Length: 275
Image (cartoon, rainbow, N blue to C red; front, side, top):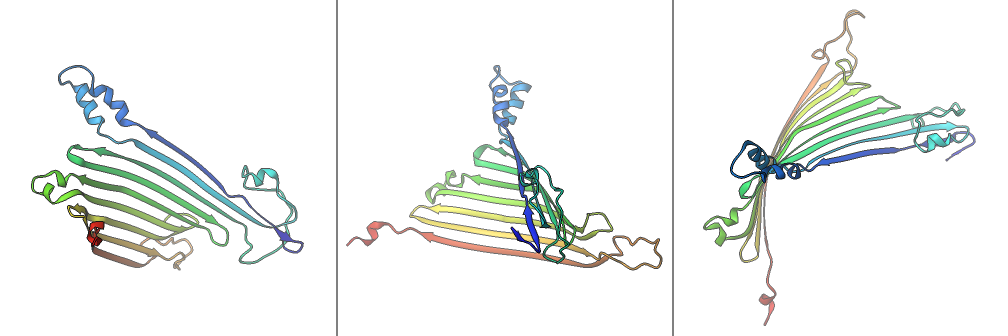
């Protein structure tokens, strides 16, 4: 798209993804069934069979926007095989017409363990990095680890409780996150923000379906964050003095939140409305 004075505008977003998984239970189950009696090999097989499938994924998303082109870019650029093109451009300037490039990388890994009596645990780790070049050069990096969740289904099978509930589940989650932002890079001279987050979301959640078509949910959450902000340019006495990260610190923000919710639902039987 474009006109004679401003030229053509071209962009080529690209998205590449790869996923993989390892079926850990299928690897260990033959060991758990091998031989008679108890052996180290059989014990390893029984323990390994409780692991959930290991899943991993990686992706990269890129986009390039070029402005003021005098002719169409090459087919190679249009197909996303290259991020540059040899095309004459008009000398156009403006805040909204600056060539830009965006790169975003994602990595994730997750697995878990299935335990007896209805207990399940899972753990995951994620990594994200995004870079932007154009009007301003920025970089952001985020790491989430650990991200642990645990659940238990089986309260309704215990004595006394089986007379009250038809189903019940208890869930918990703990997540730690780290985020860094900078201008151009994330070194000590470019860092503008460094934050750390801790979240229990939920700290505890109980879902129950009572006998008599009554359902209840109790949920509590707790989270906190610590955000350090840094100034990009700090005046120094001499040109040879490089300000330290501590000297560039301009502020700290602490946040703590908590919440509690409760809900009750009831399903009325159709017999209730009969005359």
